[in-house]
Amino acid sequence: MAIDYQWEWLRGQKLTARFDNSATALSDTYVPIAISSNALTEPSQGQELVGVAIPDAGASESGVPVIISDDVFKVQLDTGENPDIGDAVTVEADGSVSVHSAGSGDAIVGHVVDYDPASAGICQIKADFAALKGLQATYRMGFNNSIIGDITEAPATEMVCRAPFAGTITQVGFRHETAGADTTDDLSIAMDCNIDGTTCMDTEPALAKGASDTDDTFSSGTGITVGVIDTTADDIAAGDIITVAWTLTRTTPDTEIADLSWYVEIQPTLTA
Image (cartoon, rainbow, N blue to C red; front, side, top):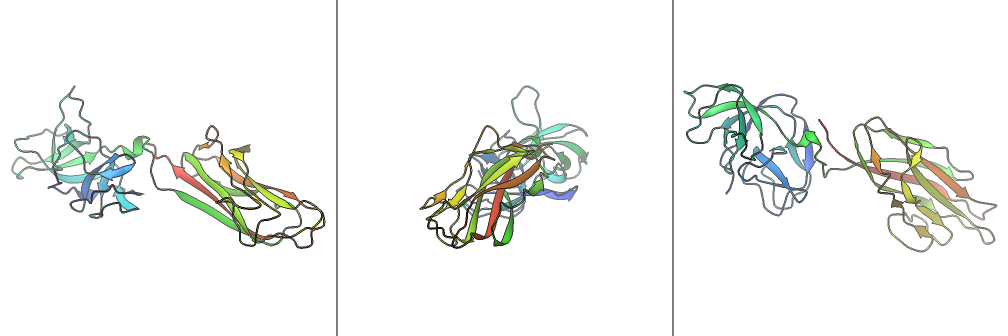
């Protein structure tokens, strides 16, 4: 059934993250939301919540903002509920909440912090969302930079970032504006991505003779090696130093490789 009751945000961090919506549009604004198959969905009774979706998102809409911090919300109690301060609550399919029953298997989605029996079934709860307990977000953060000019020696190792969160490396690659040319010797450039000095690549992305101006390593083609990430070595912890390093194969080219642009993408895992 559709959500009938909104969760009114009252106070807290109002920390948001962006998620992709499922193929079903959300029925209202500020609705409690769950995750199914890595997409937002309105919850069933007793389901764990990831947060509160701010807009009434359309079907398959991407980047939907969701409040994921354990803030205080004004919510509707299910019919007949009369909670005490501190009681744990679970969500009902219409968006209301009921007092959690121990041993039921239902997820706890918050605790009552204020309730007046004369309030017509309205109470305040401090939310207990799943997003900050290890749920992997579908949102990804990209880092990029450019190296301008002729590449006559391997560029210096460059810091991408000090990881602001735990997660995984999901994409690594680069492009050149000028491919360079050498009729007699090998000419190529490859990029490595390292987490605290250890590579996370099975295959380094590279561009070699045969590649054209403005080619990149994100799709295959002549002279192009698409990078392959080592999925056993791609995890990052908050505070890890992520760097890129280069290998240049060059003798005396007729035209130098020039103007590189690199890209590294991280998918965060939000943890409490």
